[in-house]
Image 1: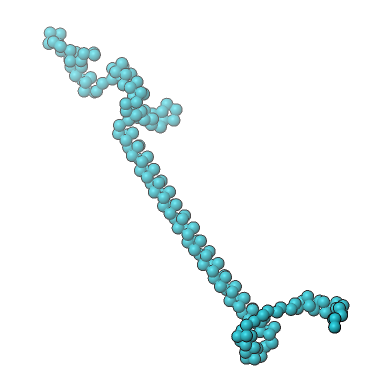
Image 2: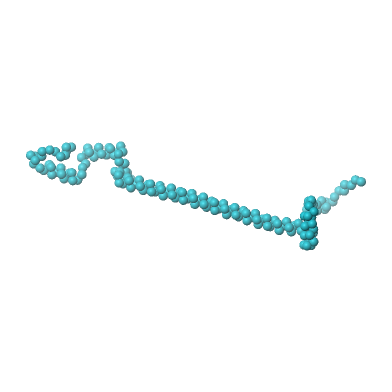
Length: 173
């Protein structure tokens, strides 16, 4: 005999929509466990499922939150370490650069010719053995620059009588 199709009322349709049927096939062992839980808790299957689900969901949510927090903490620690390492490398590079720059400045002061800039007045260092250094040396020789004690010796030599001057110790003069 064939079942007749009965048109359902609007209320019955709404009820089914709000309370859908959820069925699953269980092993006999699992079915026995569910029936024992029903008897012990005095809850029907729907209420038992709802309670188990909400408790498990809370535990699951807590576990997820714990895992997320652990990963965030690890990410923060990793980011801190990367930043610290990069900062230390940058600081070491900065220190090395400062040491190098100080050494260059000290070397310039010791071996280069300092001339003050005609515009800003800051020292301008002419490196030894540079082209500019050569030009300066030529200029100094042309203009007759010499040591202070050499000037004194030259004056003494010039004051001597002519007969005592046998040879000129200052050939360029």
